[in-house]
Amino acid sequence: MKFTKMHGCGNDYVYVNGFVYELENPELFAKQVSDRHFGVGSDGLIIVNPSQVADFKMDMYNADGSRGAMCGNGIRCVAKYVYDHKMTNKKIINIETDSGIKRLVLTVNDDDKVDSVRVDMGSPILNASQIPVEFKKEQVIDETIKIDGTKFKITCVSMGNPHCITFVDSVKDFPIEHYGPMFENNEIFPNRVNTEFIEIVDRNNIKMRVWERGSGETLACGTGACAAVVACYLNDLTENQVTVELLGGKLFIEYDLEKDTVFMTGPATTVFEAEN
Image (cartoon, rainbow, N blue to C red; front, side, top):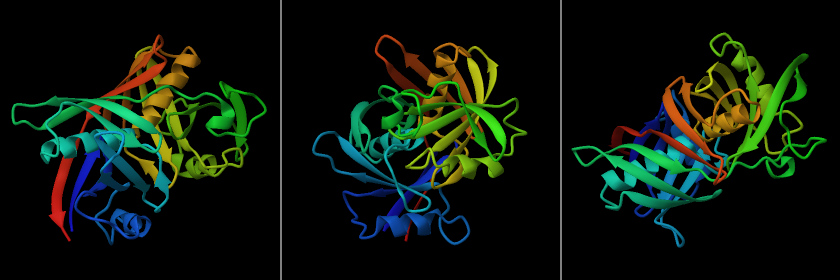
């Protein structure tokens, strides 16, 4: 079976062409290929499948084999995969995900390869029950919770998957390995949660580290960057157009207030192609 390893800002996945190969147990395969010592090494598995309602369908699995509804960095790489592999010649495509159909605009270089992709990520969900987060209020914006005896101000947003955003003085010095799993598995998040730890640089720039449910700390999270910018704007900490600096690179996020939708622009990179 042929496969491709790709990354968006260091958020890396193994990609398989579902038009050609059918995986009997993708959950187990995701765990095997994601292992960084005994497998290929990745944050998970993405299968590019046919779709009845869009140009392509993205099926995503986390490193622990659990199913993921949406991945912002992953979907940009899907766009690069299908264009670079001549599965489409369109520079505007629609991709079906478990959180809906996303529209992507591809930027192509002189070698006819995709360099970057702008994704319409859809509207942020703020209703607590839809995120979901079990909280006494309809929305969780600038609310306080206690994690291991420490109080954190949190804002919760769904971008097709649940996110909890909190603000810290320094992302570099924050002990994410300690607090990340505690956020992920806190009882108020019935489906677990992705947690973004944000340092405000100025009104148009933030730094972010992310603890992803099922994968631990990753170098980037596209949906997390979108959720973070929405949270920053709602808390009047930034404007609605923000550059997000992640461990693996930068994403440009636009929160279109008139359309109530979020646009994400960032790179997509092929690491290598191989055959097992």
